[in-house]
Image (tube, rainbow, N blue to C red; front, top):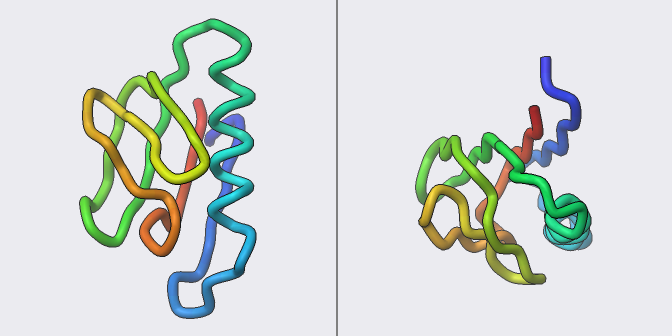
Length: 78
């Protein structure tokens, strides 16, 4: 079980889901500790690794830059 889970139905995109993911990711990084995440995306599949960067449009997970909007369907923090 994950400590935090954000999920979206990719068929019915909600206009603020990507903003929620970006906000949570940025907040986690502000704490300064390494953050391990699992992200489900439409383009890249599942990515599991350390979250190192987050802005309002992209995350960097395990060295890979991932678009948030219309791509991420699940964001999970352990």
